[in-house]
Length: 222
View 1: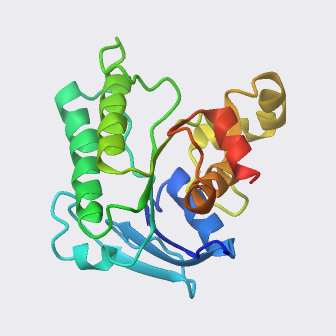
View 2: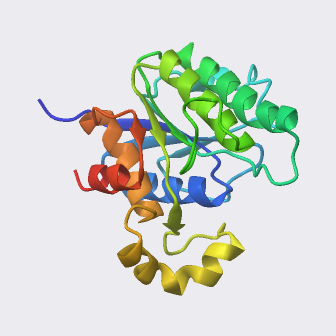
């Protein structure tokens, strides 16, 4: 039996990770359609692409009907915790993500949900780093909500060629990527590998539900 075609919901397409994932979805023949959900247009036009604008991710009632008919969700939306109190960060990270995930689950609980958290995320929810505790809580509850939930914990990511939304830090250190990957293979991968690994969770899903850098690289090869 052949692999099923992939229909993916993508968030965060105006950010670095989401844009990289979107570009790979549009280029990958295994993906037949993509729904981008964002607060503003992503600025990309493609026959596979449909957009649903949600100015407030805590009120998805006007667009939720669009979620029907998709078998994957690649959640790449996130905010930095720098300078933010825990209650605010939790609201914009845990509450926002779970609100979106629950809306998606109402239309397909069997959908594969890929969530970008980050290296050093704290699964115990009790560690010293505030952001890591919040991300850990988010991961844990997503894995309770979806049977096919995959938590992505990338470290340093090399952007995909042609990306517009690249963090200055990555632009500045881009030339060092081959060296960093050789020296620290557990900490560096490409955004294309992240995206390919997400796509491969649909038909070639791994046994692991928490994917560190080496897991992401390996899954991207399948």
